[in-house]
Length: 297
Image (cartoon, rainbow, N blue to C red):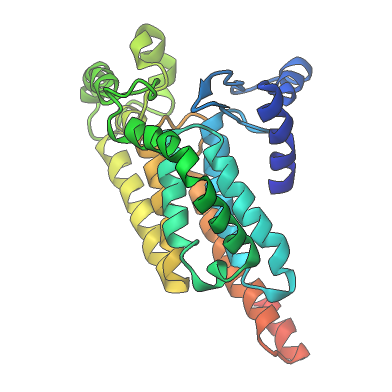
């Protein structure tokens, strides 16, 4: 799935249009939504590949990167997954989402500082390449950083800002107060609030939909989910805690449209399965009978 997403993204970047999205819209019944974001940010078309939206694609790339990093621990197939590790990180950047950029920063800190990654030929090549390009792209990256830090004043930011989010919260507040503890029900913000309040647009934070749809209990439950994922993954590998942190940062600053809550839980389970079963079985000399019992268990 990662390879297919990366392949579909290439013509989208070159032609600045997603023809896969056109094919889906013209030949299938869409139960939710599919949007080809034709906007250009930081000189690149905001890609969504085979996914419904660019932020959805960004979340997929970021979470998948952690699984690729785990698979890379197996020396037999290391080369294949090292390439995917780097390509998925680059694909996340191509979405042009500043929230996704923060998750990529988590990936760089959590995964690319590992000695095993830094010792790969691909990392060394990429590092030298980046050093050579640094004088030419310094202003470009400075613009990206400025758009994240100063979203209200940066001309390159575009899209959402803290002022917009404040106005959106003013719209959501009365609906939240209708049922502050349990909320108004699933999708209430999109079916009842958004149609009557155009300024809500994409509701640029998950907290708006959480508080309006599920109230205080929903916000508390969501926070507990993030914390529990961090605690659980820390038991298997400390670097995996950046997975839920990256997910949290993306949804903290962008709408949750197209990103289901169970997506993080799916990847947490997948990461644990890879760490527990695949890596343990391929790296340790286990007797055939023990392998059968281990797999059955």
